[in-house]
Image 1 (cartoon, rainbow, N blue to C red):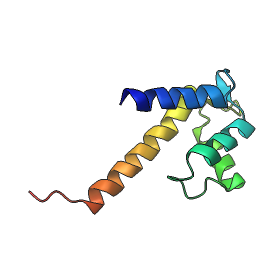
Image 2 (cartoon, helix red, strand yellow):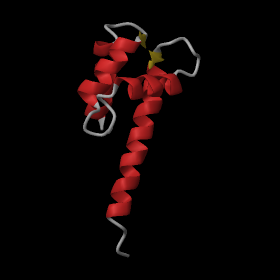
Image 3 (cartoon, one colour):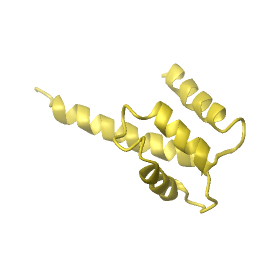
Image 4 (tube, rainbow, N blue to C red):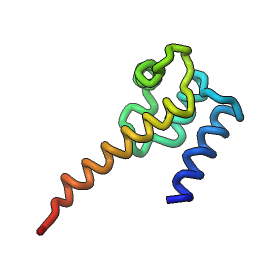
Length: 91
């Protein structure tokens, strides 16, 4: 689990070029490069822009680390639900 956390942090820091937020272009690249395996619309720029607007709680046009984590949490929860639905408990 430690390596997963390090990967999440490192990915954000590299994508934001050490800044506190991801601008639209950086967010688009992060999603396309790192989330295409778990998101259907990762290469659809208008869908990614819409997702960014949904994440942008403070309406500054950027994605903060906390807003990025909200996306990761949503994706992890969705993945968990799919896994539990496809592998129901046999007890």
